[in-house]
Length: 175
Image 1 (cartoon, helix red, strand yellow):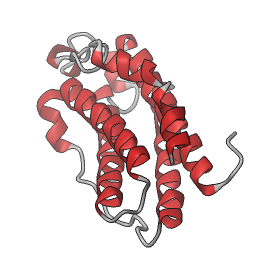
Image 2 (cartoon, helix red, strand yellow; image 1 turned 135 degrees about the vertical axis):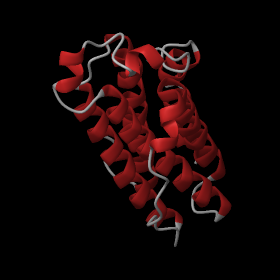
Image 3 (cartoon, rainbow, N blue to C red; image 1 turned 180 degrees about the vertical axis):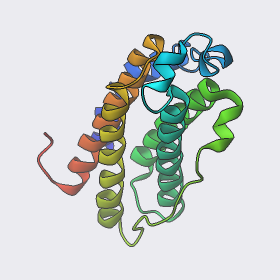
Image 4 (cartoon, helix red, strand yellow; image 1 turned 120 degrees about the vertical axis):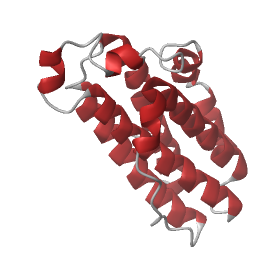
């Protein structure tokens, strides 16, 4: 489905922000996770930024795992699948770098993706992407480190673009 891949090729803003170092460069370094950049009162006001990033990392790993499995089983058009997988790998890489050693604490990917057909996979992946976008929205409302708000918002927007591409595969309304 060249149309879906072309649609997402224009979404390079999130990838550029990530590659430019906003998230991938470790904007949330060890001092920030340890409370150095965030005062104790900010960390006590709810889940820590590190906990939130670990939650997002688990979702991104699950999405990357799903696209890898779909490509291996021909459950997604190869050009679109490779593009979406590349995006998810960039998100994983950036979140892992931001978390540092704590990235190992993020849960491993879970199965449960329907790989029976391309349509079935698109429906499963759409649900995962929607859940990821919703989680980013929730995290962004409570996140304390201002330096990561823009890159996290960019990743969220990329996930929304993935939703549009998957809706297109399913023949659904794009918005």
